[in-house]
Length: 435
Image (cartoon, rainbow, N blue to C red; front, top):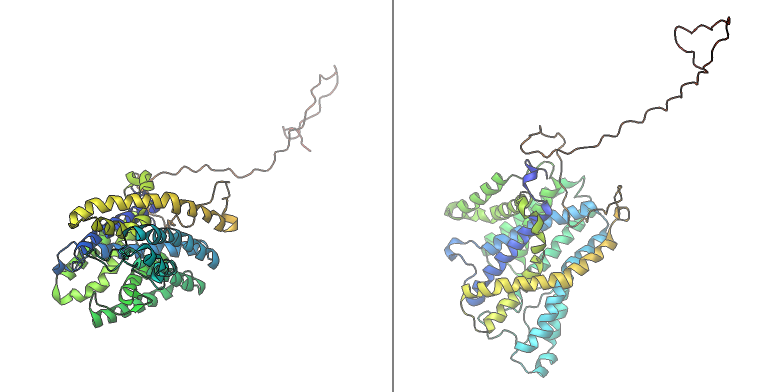
């Protein structure tokens, strides 16, 4: 999406990558508190009813809705779309699940090796989590003596919701709702907001609304509100401007509503809008000076899925202070994310070259075509604004002059000396006559 002062900002892909890393750090940071004290779900006072990790997850889902809708716009082949999603989600997931079950589990379980390997839940942990539906949080005898014994890796609980969002994009895309029929995105968003409101009125903000294949329904609907909002912002990117001032105003509105009891229930609807619009807007207004450092933030997904196993291991080793756990777990989870990126994610992402649209392998000038899932379209308004010499980047276009008709060669005029006494032929109107 175009913005004034484009030279000030990094590429949108860089902004999205950095924001995903910021979100992953916030999630790992926030998990350090319930890992030590399960009754404490956030680093902030419970009376504030604000979770930085929850805000980050809302931003995650909105950015996914925006970028996945853009991927469909670039290539509407349903089978290529699904394979791209599989290559993105499953290799790192299978890596962390198998290492947890086959390496960490046998080392830390309180069961004997015979009991551990003979328990069907050991193998069910790999199979169920590989399918995402249903999730299995427990490994036999693993982390059962920790303060938080309820999950070997609670970080993966949002992945089934993410894949549900992918299926929504697929269905809406197949019926044309991401192109000419984009108007359907408004009733779709409204439907999810109504469902979220009904659940909130029934069970409260963090209440239990039941589960679907071990996935909490209340949280899934809430996060899908942000996901569909991202789809809508992409569908109407030519009409809805992304302005930082509006993003900050929405965050301020959320904070005001959160601390104003009469309108506090409205935060359920304001939060996904503030976090979603804010995340996408900030991605398009990320500082340009960070444009060359995006390789440091690619491991965000690996850091996210490795966060809780790392935290549980430090807790098992005797760490009982949340802030000490932050100091130890955040950098360790980042290192695990780097390993996952280099060994698993980057090699599997290279396979996507075989999933390009056939005529996109090379552009018209012979250069490689852009990767449809690492670039985000920048929409240029139909009526360009007046150029500002202080904020515009001048693009020099080499004009190709129109081909001119071939010029007929001038006739060769024979030069001779007239013989003495011979008459010289007259010129036609003072010019040489041309055939």
